[in-house]
Image 1 (cartoon, rainbow, N blue to C red):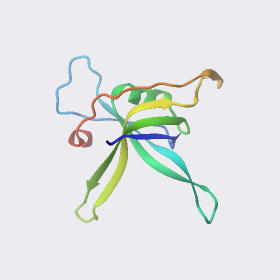
Image 2: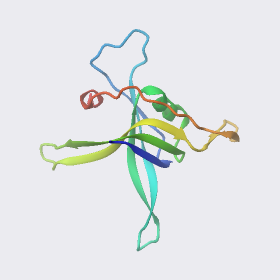
Image 3: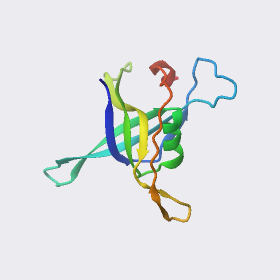
Image 4: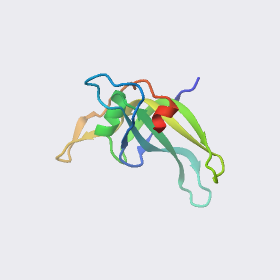
Length: 145
């Protein structure tokens, strides 16, 4: 079973990247997009030299769907979220570069754990909780194009 649950803070505003797909789009369907951000996840280990709490930076990617739209439209740098998805390893090698590997979360659901911020700077009493389910993720080839 490949499933991961994380709670952390966005390290920057979500990045939105359109991607093309080979399958023809149905008329009236919105273009597909990739929403991604790095999630700062703290853990109990401490740096013995500085005493600082350790933080892992985990790349998170959404392919279309309600959860990706929620992240793109309602979340910003520093917001605390819970993310559910699967872990994916991508391997590649350049002509002169050594082989590389990156691990990322292909997310399915997201819950905003902070309060909504309104234009006036006031916080509402309702948490910004939204659970979205992603559309089917494209193949690695479609995502790269």
